[in-house]
Length: 211
View 1 (cartoon, rainbow, N blue to C red):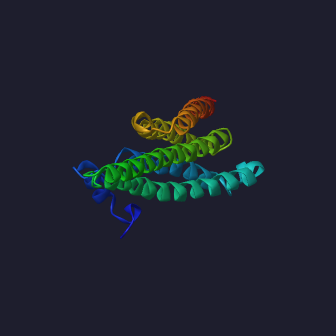
View 2 (spheres, helix red, strand yellow):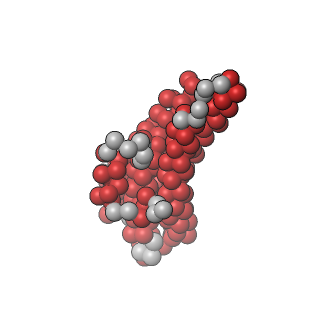
View 3 (cartoon, rainbow, N blue to C red):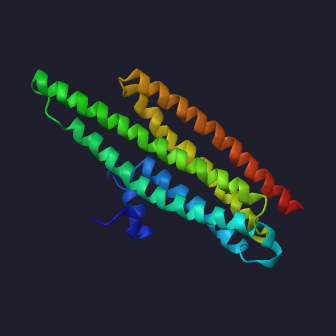
């Protein structure tokens, strides 16, 4: 089956707006984040090779290459998120007529819940990397396009907080207290760091726009 990224954007929007359960919030957040980091790649491409930015060419090339890798990872994670939700729904549809069936169903649900929590955390962690390289580029990228680094920072941070809502909705149903505690700590760490990196990037962008 063709991946979401192989479909026309119009069809992806139609699917997201429909009553189909996927693509849902997690996968849409990954898609939005990929659009955000694409702006970082664009600023990098508009900086690398320019004589006035020769001193930072090596760093800009590294940042741009990492931006493309992050886009590719988010594409895969979008599909992973869709698959994780489908496993969760499949677990809920398992029979529960006998005690044995109920136990197997609950085990499947719990396993699916952990997967449906871990994937959004991976998306958020990947977006955190996107914010980190965007913050680096904000101080050295082409001034003529630096506002787009600010766009990347705002969009990627928003995508982080959006995808972490999937963690919030799943954790109350997770029976593994240790897993839930670790997931909550990781969620809070990522959210806080995302805010910091966004603010750092936007401050650099505004300073250079006004300088």
